[in-house]
Length: 250
Image (cartoon, rainbow, N blue to C red; front, side, top):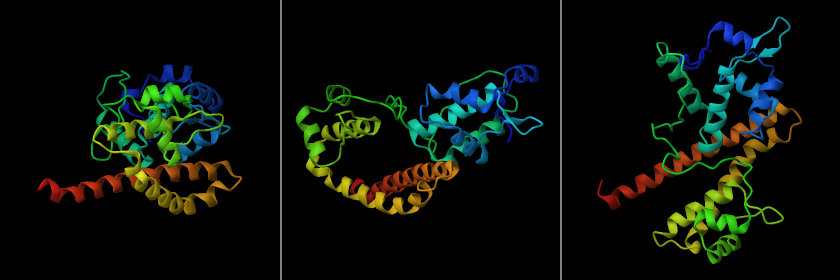
């Protein structure tokens, strides 16, 4: 697969900057603690990056490859985009960037309809976010009593000994936004029930892969889960829009 022209460097610069897969992993780990060598191999197998190979078959990555990997990992982490959408965006860059100068503009991940998810709000920094109760309340805008009710309903769950992760923050922020329109935690029981049903369905698909000892199979399980979540979000949003059309007179 051709690299986006916006990320190309001269052949000399590329040759001088080639890295092993372990070195690339070290470059990415600071921002993406969960990334593994298996994950990098998986992204290569999916055609999202194409490192050079030595005569002995060892992978060698340039800085352009690292930039491409950062884009893919960021789109997955912050915007939950499936690989299908990410692949389309990179292909568009490959097609449109033929005459681009050798600058390094920041790629922006967009949704399947062209929207830019998370543009209005600051994205969650990492799946490894750890907040205590006071920090979660402060960052989400919830009050203590509402957070306690969400926990009682099972909408927000903490990890022992009382840490909250990135998903807990996302849920709390969403509930705080809905509260501004008069929603109360008791109105959200249906969301929890619907999510549990989806978890049961999706688990049947990913559990057999996740149980395998092969790292590639586990990477495929994680990617399948991301794809299913993204498709579920699209379906839910479309169904709600359709359901509101009569109310809006459209």
